[in-house]
Length: 256
Length: 66
Image (tube, rainbow over all chains, first blue to last red; front, side):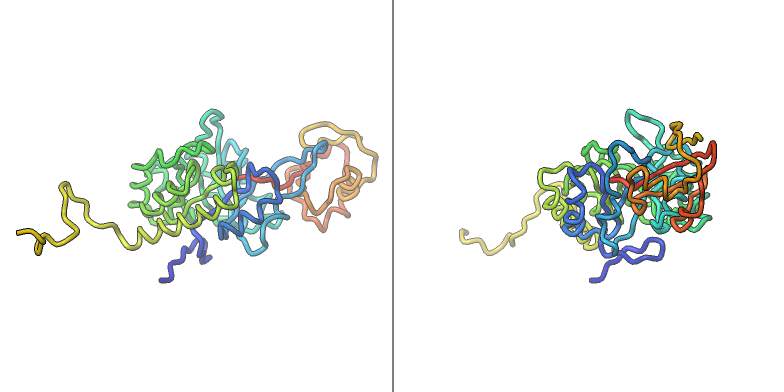
């Protein structure tokens, strides 16, 4: 069965988005992208360090992929808007992941500033994917502001703790019309599968793959988990019962 | 003359275009993004724009991120 995700008018076959941070080297990134089957790849923009110059990470991302620059480092809407505009001018396309954070301990997003940035950038024609704390009213405002999808966190960035916000994610999935992409905190393929089984449209994974012992194989595992979770969501679970219900017929036993 | 590059003051010779500045720094121009006085400058303009006293230059690049 054909099951495509459409974001910003673009059809996507893969529901696994991946980030490019924390890898041991840039050289591994193309192998991870290939193993994941991912079509949407995230990166960040930073000042050049003249004493320790490195390659531009874009050189390691397949040209067929959709680039999703994030606005990490932005502490308010204005800074996020500035980063988004720079990325677009630099030829990154018009997709952007809004990330506005001023809390350095938990790196939790500032939903208010994120909504403001989304309003501005959606009007400028960006396909805006805001990273947010999973609050229903904030998600509705992001939707009204023109977000192409909403990206609530499963757990704080980089913690690999999984779907700590499970109940709030469930509400967002039920109530928000644009795709819900669970971003941050997913640490294991089983957690990605669970998010998909709950009805998330996609997941974004970075740390769990980048810091795995074998990132390429882990990327493949995440890809399969996301597909399995999606299939399970589409097919629907069987009924849950309080007491045992025999799977085999309770007639025709060998004894009398 | 002095310009501010990535937040730090720097002294450069006169008549240096953005492209010449980057090459002097040993950077591959195709690997960076430039913002001059708060405005993004397209790559094709880097040769034409000569840096002036008190200019504020941001030399940026894409890095791994999630």
